[in-house]
Image (cartoon, rainbow, N blue to C red; front, side, top):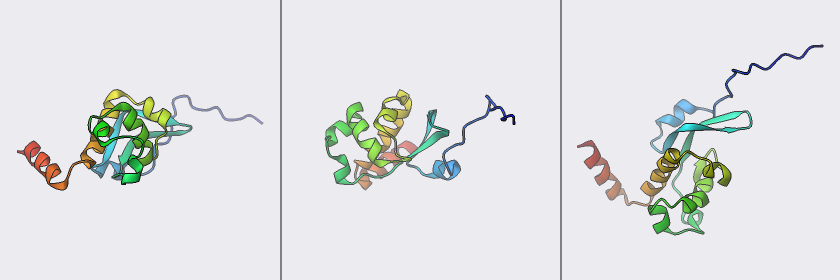
Length: 121
């Protein structure tokens, strides 16, 4: 019995509910998707970390978008959860975008609102 050939142009399935994720302000659309097995991850949602998830790094390092600090914290607060290796292989623009989401969580609500107001003015 012959086995069907795989279509070399077939696209790997995307991460679930990409449209819903894109509407979340803490979701980043990756310029370069991550391929994990047969799944292609195009969007990463960053959730607000708890204090314990920041262990092993400093707030100053995170505020400065230190790559090593982001490599420690992002696997703990991303959906789908990224591995350290996947964070290390991100395009710099995608890492910066994810890091800015993390940095935004370090600000007080009033500071975030002030920044958002100045950006929309």
